[in-house]
Image 1 (cartoon, rainbow over the protein chains, first blue to last red):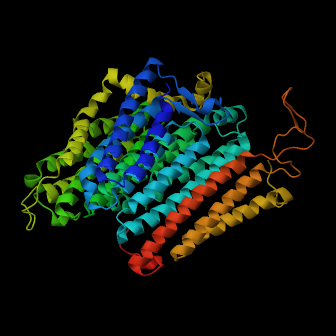
Image 2: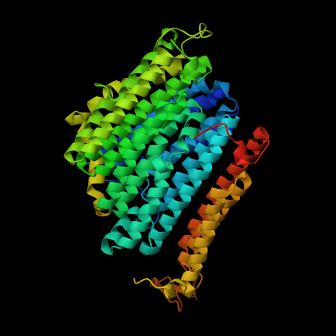
Image 3: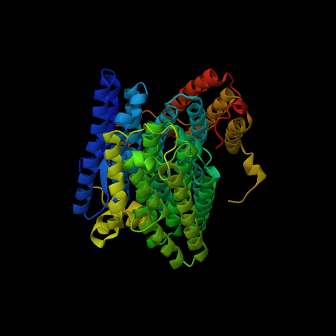
Length: 499
Length: 133
């Protein structure tokens, strides 16, 4: 398992090479920018199979040979590998899409350099086993995403980026205070060791305070409702592939993943905290979808739906039952697939028509069949229509709510799903169906490479429901659920597996 | 631990309290000020408050500098012979990283603020009204 440093090393090297060689020609930066995510997809599947041969016990990579708790270690377990595969597949489709899409911007090499840095940060945050290292990855990802949101350097992009940067940086500072409190009590930075120390000498005052700090910080990063106001500005302002990355995987790997890892595995959950997660999740679901209903900007509407769907994930995980966690994690994977696809289709529409206003579109399906059909698949997926992937995860979450005797939550989840359907019918009706609007007669289908990446994601939308088959579920979703279910046992399991 | 005002204003706690006040000043600055540059300065103040907090965590009054040398470390028997406790060096290393990160954030924010000034002709956030969040 010497593969693990490559998850950080390969994209970092790619970013470095790109900043030197990419200036020569755009083709070189295209090549490096696509080769790196492709390599990472292969590497993450290789790690999945290696981890399966280890029977999903966590693998601890000792950086530079320092045995934990000294030095920084990487820990690869079921939850990390689930996130790694999701992040790298979405990144690959986003870079394929970028080849034609980013032609209209200057300095493509800067774009790819920042993209690869963001990818490094997400991979690093997912596999690290050291809490301060997690903070560093969080900041690297955040800084490169501020720059990418402002990439167009128009008025809207700059404004959105400034807002995002100020809010997200203050969130990071709250996380840093939390780390400071944990360090002062446990005198260690290794996640497993912190967990062990807290088990040996529990301190409920400290745990309560630190949980609130982390909820504030990571909640803002994952755009839960009281902290959501940066997302609908920042995500639509970025170039389309970056919107797909931000909404698809960044808010999950740096927000939801980090929150669940720190709270569930290190400092331990309490019933009160789970209740708070459930409440925040359901408020996010409702508020996100209600705000989305009256948007006329294609990408802005999608951004509000990200808030709503992250609410589903947090609701599922917050239920705390194995079935609820399964639903939450499966919805996390599904949401990254269909939301990226929706943002990519919005990018394709913007590329050909030059507008994001739904009222100026109409009848695009006749001229752009691939974009129209993939967008239809993604819309049905996010609205939860069988047999697409979104249906299965929402069904699991609803059943989990009922099993936990929370009928109101199940009802809210169903109503939000219907409202989601309503707002996506609006997109389909105004943008893709109906008569072709004046002035759109001369448009053509998006370039081939854009279509390829959209078709890959649409295929995933259709077939990802198969992941629930017992054989596949056993080595993709179940180990991840197991990690969260084990809770603070994490530290014992990690220390047992240091080889 | 029982709460008492006496403990709150003891010599050890007063430094942490001042640190909290500094943090709150920064947060107030971000929340209330309307000038982009003042917001960036507020973020800087918050960062410095946290840096100070970390340094206080590692500080021991009367502590020694944490460097192993021939005088205080016996390499053959692997034993320490020190007369007074050492200061914790790890928070200092962490803060070095945090300072670099803060520098990057500040640089980027100032660059964005300058571009905003080019586009809008103002540093006032009330003039930035293209987006409705």
